[in-house]
Structures are given as C-alpha cells and as structure tokens.
Image (cartoon, rainbow, N blue to C red; front, side):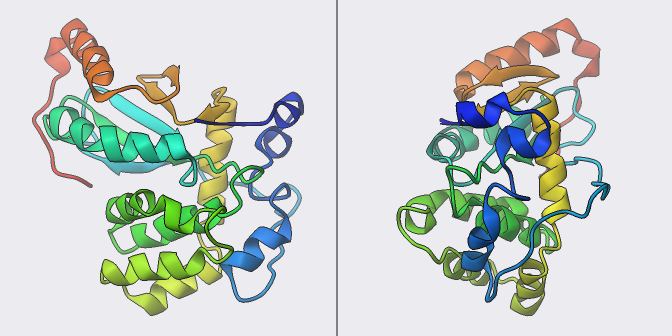
Length: 238
C-alpha cells in the first residue's frame, strides 16, 4: 500500500495534500516522460473538469465500486493482478456492480507514475483503457522508478502491443491532453478523504487498503439483498 507522507497530509488544499502533478513532482518528472521539460503548474483559477474515472461494466448497475489508485503503487498492482479478474467475473460481469478506476498518483513517492496514468488516459481515447491498465500493472516492476528513469519507452511498447494509433497516442501523451482529467480524479479522492492507495469506495463507503474479491463480493451481496429490486442484467465492459 502506498500512503501520502505525513508532511503532505498535514498541509491544506489539493496541491499540498498529495503533492500531485502540479508542483510536488516538479518539472523533472515530466522530463522523463517527454522529450523536453514541460511546465506543469496550472494557471491560477483554472477550472478542472468533473471527475469521471474509467468505467467497467453496466453504467446502470445498482452498486458502484470505485478504486482510487496509483499505477506505480505495489499494493495497487497486487490488487489489480490478483483480485481484479475475480472481481470482474464474479461481480462486474454478473451485473451486480460496476467498477470505476480513479487516478490518484502519488508523485512524491512514485516518480514514474504520471507516465503510466497519462498512457492509460491516452489509451482510453482509443477504447483501450482497461487493456492498457492491465499491461501497466503486469509490467510495473519493469517501468517503475526503481527500474528505469525512462518509463515512456515501456508505455510506447504497451501501446504498440495493443495496436494503438501511435501518432495519436504520442500526440496525446506529449501534449498532456488528459492532465486535467487526472487532476480532477485525484482532487475528488482528496475531497473524499483518500490518503493511501489502493482505496476502495463501495456505494460511497470508504475502505482503505485493497479488499479481497471475496470481501468485496460479501459487501456487494449484502447491498443487493437490501435492495433486490435494483438488480440489473449483466453487461459487457465499457
């Protein structure tokens, strides 16, 4: 599990709480992502879009499981690779709940995480968020900050494996197209009291730390039993 440092948690406001993206990482993080340093400070008063996350499953399912995660967080990687397939088959594909992934990159402790979040967001433009999500977590120990100072080459490799339009992917990545989306998702997590990754939120109740698929299924079953009429039919990934 990755946690926000006490120093960061003691400050107020979105930027100071998690030191995310805008200032804490500094231009050096972006130097490893792109061909040249990029200014990453948001314009004063610049509005962010509404947090939306990335949906898996039926948008009309009666229950929503939300995950606030950092792609470089080892606990998030374990949750995705060990619990994710079970959650998908037993809960999401069964129509009991849908699942939303929200960006919560902790740049103060994970120097390469922004590359991964940006790559996943750009893959989403081509309908491949979840496929990129899976490759990023499966290869976490190849591209993380302890393994390389150039995570971008791994993100490009994953994009190629997925058959993405590399020109569009590269332009999306290099222009930081989805930086506001990442910021908005993280800001929502901060406002909900998220302080570590992975953190789950099931129907607005927070569960810090990754739960097992069995634990999540038990929670979902109890919620479904409380409102059986709300159950819906299974749906494919979105």
